[in-house]
Length: 130
Image (cartoon, rainbow, N blue to C red; front, top):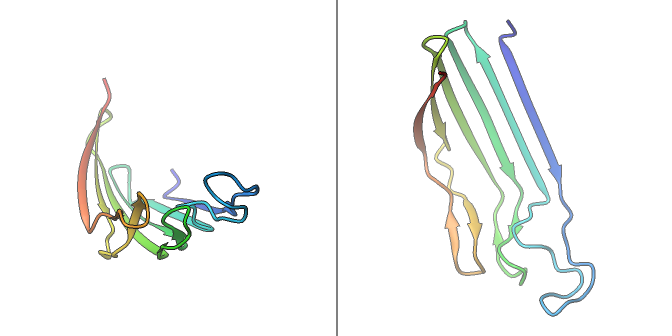
C-alpha cells in the first residue's frame, strides 16, 4: 500500500480577443481567465482505515468582465479532508474548505455583481457500495 499520493496541476492561460468584434476590441483579455492556476493535493493514509489530505488552489488575478476595468485579486485557498473506511462497503469523508478563511472572489457577472467565495466551511459525505 502506498501511503502518500500527491497530485499537482498548473495551467497557463493567455486568453484574449484576437480580432475586433461587436463585443470587444482585439487585445481585450477574456473575463475570469486567470493567467496562472495552480492546484496541489496530498493524501496520506495512516493505515487501511484512516487518512488525511491537504491541498491548495491558487488563481492569479483576473478581469471581472470583458470591459477589463475591474480586477478580481489573486487568491490562494487551503483545503483539508479526513477519510475513514468503516468497512468494505462504507467510507466516510469530512472536507474542510478554505481552512484559513481567506477572503476571495469566486466569480463575477459583470463589473458590479461579484460573488465572494465560500468562507471556512465543512461537509461530510458517505460512500456506500451495494
